[in-house]
Image 1 (tube, rainbow, N blue to C red):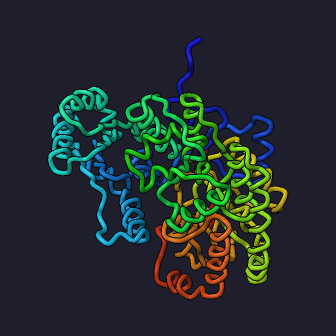
Image 2 (spheres, helix red, strand yellow):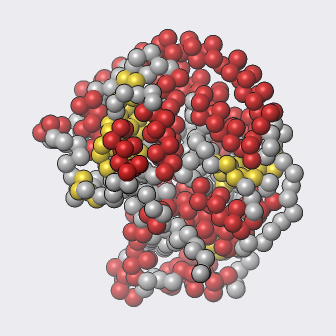
Image 3 (cartoon, rainbow, N blue to C red):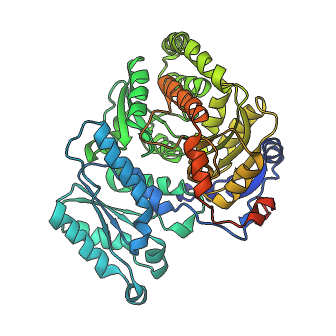
Length: 480
């Protein structure tokens, strides 16, 4: 029987759902019974695209150029990754802050009719002449996929002319509704065109630490501090990484990821192709999750005893401080929205502060999410679950009905309803590990004590929905 190779499309794995409106109790029961079926929305207000995630995952790699074989509009959402890249440079003490090198082939109507091959060739040649990069990433798009431009054949032909490593990435937006598929597409391409299944001599104590763009420099330092305490050297990738660090991946003794859905599929591939064991647990937000994440990688490396001593010392240090924050947040009702790993991690964190979960929005539901839901259902009585890739119209409906005291997550829409908000998908501030927990808790308390900005914002900004929508069922457009 032929080996089944992962396609990079997350829906190809069984049990992954991306459109659902329910409760925590109900989704746990339905998943256990095998009754959780994929649905669709008869109306959708935008989706996060795979191409944006593929670009964001690699945007800060040194000596790289990013060629988007697409119309100009396809790179519009990359502004967030560009912002994170610039901020990250400032936090790392870089004085001459640069933008990533992005070239768009600008597929237009003529390209759709006659093909965009020549535009792609010209763009890659321009990238080499202008920047002389070590790496050139060529991103497919919905448009290039539909017209059938063979980016693999084109880049293979161009590779004969140039010394730069040219990596085609198949992240056509129509392939998957689960935006994390974009991460997988980027890693599949890295394995195929850079690592090439070539094994390297192992470096003792070296661990691959995979991190997305939204992990702040403070969080990186916290993770490295924790791992250094058990004598682990970190290969921090792919954010602020390089071709040399990417090539170093097969030399690692183990792998782990800060985000639960960022490199989970890639770590499986590294085990299959390079025999690199990995830890896949949770995102380290909050005491319980940080402990679990820390123990996970320690177990892979046989450092269980060492890590328990460190965890005990960390608890002794932070628990009195957490108790002070808890006195300010006890009993406050909260709605959470974030990425699949981050939203569930933040939901566990609020128990550290005695808060009550009333609503949870996350892009995907799968076996990993089920583990988290079972944990949350032991803590929180009843809460709404919205499985949605974006869909702000559902979020504002729910937040308006539930009227939480605080909103944790991606706050733009909730802030305009006058709810005190705290950003958890933020590459500018610490949120992870033992120290990140203290910062985040104090930030939530500060927002609750000073809600004036959000209240004034609600008075002067009107969301683009009719008043009648707030009386409707938030999930009326989900077709089961």
